[in-house]
Image 1 (cartoon, rainbow, N blue to C red):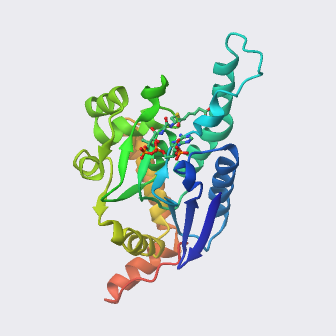
Image 2 (tube, rainbow, N blue to C red):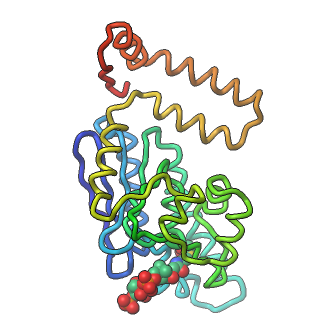
Image 3 (cartoon, rainbow, N blue to C red):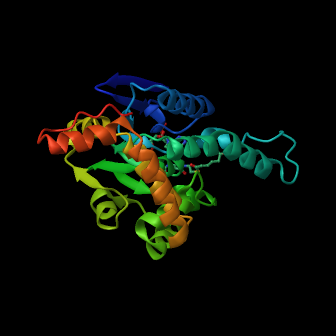
Length: 264
Ligand code: T3D
């Protein structure tokens, strides 16, 4: 259901329900959240990559399961309440864990990313897409609202007008279009996805502790006015200056050698 491997400080998590394009069932969501929590606690993990097995990245909620939620009474509000509860219990902790994890997270988008599968990719810090990948705000096709953070991340990445279009029309867009609107950071040939992501992930995994603080600063900026954000930068810079990596970075510069960051 979730595959996990680690090398060179990079933890790779692979959604593994390929017969359903890695649609989320409860077990997959629980496993993914547990893996992100473990990554947070494990100093040997310095970058996380999330990808999908088979031809999909993730197709969102497993639609074979959603209508059976609720108390089975068929009573008014039962399904709505069950879906709200499901989002609250499974998706929200995952999205928050990813965005508060003070380590870089890369989505290696190997194929279609739809519904909450796309939301997952959007919650990652960077998205590298294979040329054949595609992106669908699929929610509208089944009469739902984008969830799992999509209405937060999408307008911030692509702007309000494009976000409205993608969410309201639910059209499937190519990796090239996703790149052109800023939804992904890079597009690479399918055959180069693993190697390109690995090179980026290893580079990030050898970066300083301040990568986590940069991530915190960027997320805070989305909800701050300028004076507040300046104060936050001041506080975060104070934290960064206390790290061994800051001392190493300056020492390496003055010694005219590359820095060797420990992530501390
Ligand atoms: O309580 C809650 O969980 C609420 C939370 C909701 C969050 C959400 O994510 S709602 C949105 C759910 N996702 C979707 O609506 C996407 C549904 N899938 C699609 O629209 C298409 O499958 C894709 C655009 C993703 C890909 O299309 P295509 O043509 O490349 O593949 P396909 O043939 O449609 O799918 C391949 C198989 O995967 C197929 O099964 P089969 O016929 O080979 O046995 C298909 O049924 C299955 N599949 C794809 N998506 C899902 C799925 N099975 C279950 N759930 C899916 N989401």
